[in-house]
Image 1 (cartoon, helix red, strand yellow):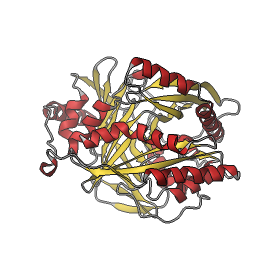
Image 2 (spheres, rainbow, N blue to C red):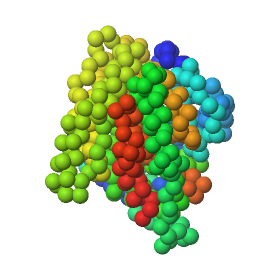
Image 3 (cartoon, rainbow, N blue to C red):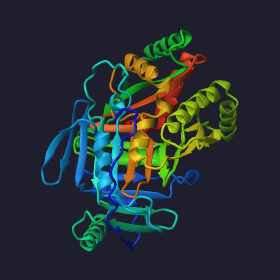
Length: 472
C-alpha cells in the first residue's frame, strides 16, 4: 500500500445485537481470562480529561493477522493459514467485507479488528526508508484479531454491554455464552507469581549504558547540525525477569493508570500497555491525534510538583519539539483529509500523569469521502511523536543508533470497528513479556538544544513506573 490510499469495496451487512447485563468490574474478568491466547483488554484505567469512559474485553478471535517483516500470515479458526504481503491491506479487506452502519446509543466499538500494529511495519508504510536487517522481536511486528463478540464496559454509567455481530452464527446464543462466561469467570482467580521468583528482586538491565545513550544523543545532534533532521526519538530498551506473571499488568495499572492502557495475550507473548498517548481516533469522518512531546517527572512535594510543571510549560526546547511534531502530523493528515480541514486547536497543553508531566497537542481533520480507516492509519504510521522530523531520515537514524528492534514499541494498539470508527494509542510505557523475560523501552525526542545528560534522565523518568512494576 505504501503511503498511497487504496480503495476497499464496502458491503454493509446486518446489525449488531446487544444486551445490557449486570455490571462486573473488568479487573475481575481479567484475572480469570488473562491466560487465554487471543484475550484482549483495551483498558481505560484513567478517566483523565474524559478520555477513559469505555473499556473493552474480547476473546476467541475468528481471524488473526500476525507475523513479522517477510513472514506475515492470515489465520482463521478453521485452521487455514496463508502468507500475505501487506497486513494493512488484509485488515482493510476484512473490515470492508463486514462493514456495519453505526448504531445510535451503541458503544463506540462493538466488533472488528483489534490488537497491535508494531513499529517494524514502517517498512510497508514508508518503503523508501533504508533499514539494516535485525532479528525479529519476540512479539513480531503485528498481531490483529478479528472479533465478532465484544464486552463493552461503560465506566461513566457502570454499565456492561455485550455485543455480537452477524459473523457469530447465532447472535443470541453468542450473547448467552458471553454472559454465562463472564458470570462464571469473574470470580477473581488469583494468578500467583512464578515460584522461582518469589522473594527475588530482579535486576533491570538496559541495552545502553548511560555513557552510550549520551553518545547516541550527541550523534543525533551532529545529524541535526548538518541538516539531515530537526529531531529524532532515541530509545533505550530495558529487560528483566518475568517474575510476576499475570499479576504484572494489575501492578502496572495500579502504579501508572493510563487512558489508553491495554493487555493482549497472543499466545507467544503478552503486551502490557500503560500508554498516555492517543495516536489516531476516528469518529465518522472526524480524525484526531494527540502527540506528546515534553516531559518532566512528578515532584515529591506539592511545591516541587509546581516547580517542575512551570519549568516544562516555560521550556522553549520542549515547546519547539512539540510544535515540530504537530507540523509533521498536520502534513500526514493532509494526505487523506479534506483541504483546509486540518487544524491544531490545542498546542502544548499541560497534562499531569501519575509519574510525569507532559505537553500534549491536538490535531484534527475531516477524512475525505471514500477514505477507509486503514488508509488513515497507513498514511500516518508510525506516529511522528516517536520518530522525528523529517520522518524517513529520522527513522533511518533511529535504526542506526538503536541496537535492538522496537517490535510493538512505538507502533499502535487499539481497534478499528466494523462501523468505521477507530481508536489507537501510541505504544509507549509498554511491556512485552515472552520467554520468561520482560522488556520495555523509554525514549525521548532529541533536538539541537538537547543536553545529553538531561535526555538520559528523561528516559529514566519515563521508565520509572515500569521499572517499579517489574522490580517489586
